[in-house]
Image 1 (cartoon, helix red, strand yellow):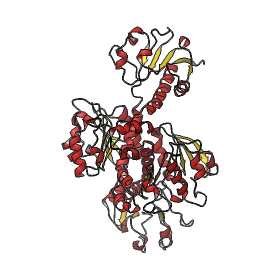
Image 2: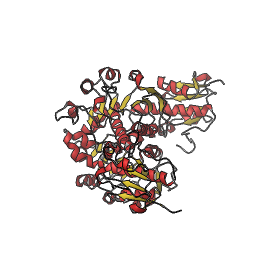
Image 3: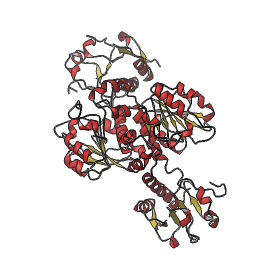
Image 4: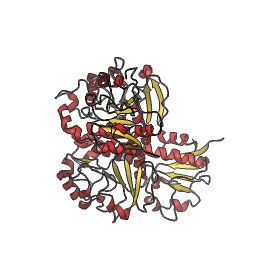
Length: 310
Length: 310
């Protein structure tokens, strides 16, 4: 079988060259390729693609700026795919890290300077085994996270828009967003992974925090506005929850001197659950998968619907 | 079908009562039970068990102190099981926490007091996705850990005594202990989970550390003696490795003022990967599993071989 010729541009990183090869493609010049992996922005995109190009893989997850150009219009017969979903696993890994570090009391351990701290710290250590974790927003990040929580023995309550059951190991219940108010007294910890909308603003506020446990951790990796910062700070100060792990904050950037920087039960990672160097690795995996699908004639991931505008 | 009558003593915690019921047993008085779950020490153990008792589940993982009594000799027809293996998952969870917190640079994040730290921190954040992790010692803890690493996309090199391949998702290679010297230049991170013997003393020493990467994390949850502390401190100071996460140290307890308390790339949790409150939860799971096996007539976990002495 002849390898499928695939072009790469405008940059030629070894990571992406390898990704194409691993997917079953063969690096080729644009004029004899059947597909193009484009790791640049719209400005540098070719005016006219050769007629042989059937598919173009773009680097970004959001493609608004591509719609602002005429690239899609100029190539009505070409299938375009984005990187949507490619970065979910990195954010999920970061989320798991924050949740585990909280439950296992790592911040207090890092502040300790004596083995005698064990008497105070050990009794506070929790586990995700058997713990009920709400994953609010069961999109790409939520689903990746659920897959990571399952082998730890956590019991996941997934919250999505429709309440259609999430069929993954470890999920004990799926709740539709309009019944969110039912979960707070049932859970040990909550992960906020939902999109920011007017409906999800302050999804975790004073009333919700009041129903959590003194050992509960609140993890937010979605958008700062989903958590009421003032109510959270108060709960952290009062010790009515165990702590918070925040990759996003409101306001963002979080100002110097804000209490979240100082509170011993708050962990802040300044919106870096998916830094540039990891995006490159994740995109390479996405390319490998889509090249394999293209080679085998299967449906591509994250196909852009030009007519629908996303 | 009649439920299998199982006695519990000397303590009667709701957790263990539930564990017996969940396994398919029914709580019963000792004289009409077929098995006994014993959550106390040998001193309080009954002199003579009723003739109907076929099996006794003990609480401890190590049973040396039970051999110092005549309990086994007095009941030659009874099967005894220990809690060996029951606590592996808690230690594995702690291990995963330390490794993730290290790779994702949580210690440096917790020390930060400004969103501007992002410029310095974000580029240092790593991922377990695609990372090669050596798990040295593929016993109960190691195997649980491998199950947790797989959904993160880590590539595990397992090291065990024989080199007999570990058949778990995510394991890319199994290396026998006598070929351990081959792994150091191949790996991104190492988890030390092997028993302490004369052969494993200073398994991670100066020569091994020198072959790791500036981004490598060394995690030790086994025994302090497996890592050469002085060599580790030097590597941490020089930045020739990324950092270390230590639940065990040499010496232990780690003295106040030791550099491992102060180094920003060292995390010390004072031997509390498996604190008392988590042992209770883990034992309950073990009881549920063994009760289910007993009810179904299957082989019990962690059967004590009285003749062999363990």
